Length: 436
Image: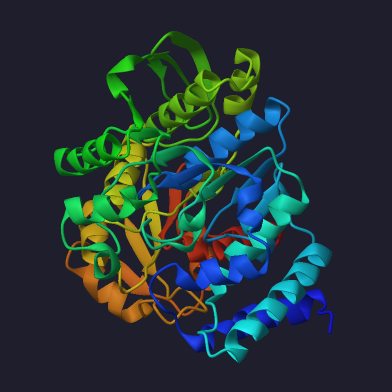
């Protein structure tokens, strides 16, 4: 039976009840039954703790500007489910999603009929992405790891050109390990023999792991060096910098993504694009400039409006909270700030709060909707109270946004941050307040 879009979405939702099995055996078997669509494309594979989405956005936008057909696979998504699978920044169509999920369901029926485990929603979505990218005849696919690296469903690919390691810090310890080296080892699990690896500057324990893995797999390692960036001009509407990248110098690169860390993400992206140029792919410098300048990525220090300024940011671990604080103090040193916070209970909640809470005049906590991992607003408020007594728990995002607008004067800043999963709801709530 051919599913329609709603039935396909329900099928994916229902797959949650089957639980998950560690390892790649299940996704490999599913893809085998679908004639291994993942082998049809060339990949830029991105792992790391923070910055994956921004680097993906820069690299894929540059490649699109250079005339290539480029797939994107991202998670989580902020606004629409179909956002996670894109070709040249256009979401997978409803028709294609329904048709390909129907095909996948047939393969899964064969698997479960033989007593094999039912694939997880993420495994199904990953297979869906590979089928769509093959169907669309993509020249490149830029894809984010879902969780970790070594046993992530995306790690079935064998035709990677470049692996990218963004900033690695402590996150998802329950799944990835208790030390930075263990986490780095898991993330470096995506590195394939003889490929090019681009890494952000890492803490020594993480860097050592990546260097050892590259040596073992006979890979070329390129490190994005912050000291090679110069002529930096920072602002929340645009940032400009130049970067010395091996044999080439990229002068006066303009980016429109705000945040103190976006220069760092941008130079990781430039190293990646430069590596592809060295591999023989034609990517003219003017297209690199155009791509870097036109890249947009909502959810990482995104300015939604002015008067008052509204910022959304997906800072959900200590490292991201540190860079959020840097950005707020750099751009808005004298302004009053009103925070809206929502966090998952398995994240570094107290460390995030400790880094940020003292900046705020007042804080509203909410429970991120629709996720069993969400920390209740009252519990989050109790944690915040240790660091800032001016905190109030609220029952809904819309109520929190409306209250923040009432508290804020024209020159104030409203900052909504924490779990990426609630930022789409914040955007809709801000738009609703504007039209009231």
